[in-house]
Image (cartoon, rainbow, N blue to C red):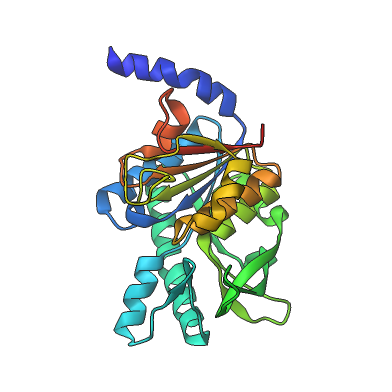
Length: 282
């Protein structure tokens, strides 16, 4: 009976979300653990089958780091962002576009829905410009997204699940490594998505980073803005992306633990939820 109860619990959410766009930032352990990879692909396919419009945006930090170490290239982060010289960007493009993106596309295809792989260069999807770290430090060829061409995504999403790798270029054709959290936020904002979901390696936004039980289950965007100065590491770009997206019209943003099987579905379709939910200012 629990299975029937779960289905009935999901029904009002499925009805509410039907026809809505959900942008999913795919990252962390969910991209590296074999079983979680399969769970993620099935979950995304299920979203499509129940009438939602999923758009996947991904990074691939651990794989980029692995290849850089093999090539004896320096690995450095500032404020959660990868310091990127031209060699770093070249490796990032090879890994993200040539390998990680195609692995995700193939897995989604195999579970029953056709997917199309894109990066910021395809159809001029992203126009980027060089940025600094939040602290003002120069971090090289790291890009901020100035524009997202939603026509490309809307055209693809009519028949396929778009899977977007977070690299792009500026007007002069210089390539940039783009933080995948920022890219997901920009895509969600440009599409006026109903939800923006982040899969990460912690239970949610933690009030105390050292205490995994201190999850902030729900917050409005003003609370997040007020706390940003005290947030460090990889959580900061996620929260900044949530603020950008919600300020641009996205209804809700969620930060969930991608190490938990089917965390995407648990957050979307159960009463209890899972992780942190961020909404507009009240």
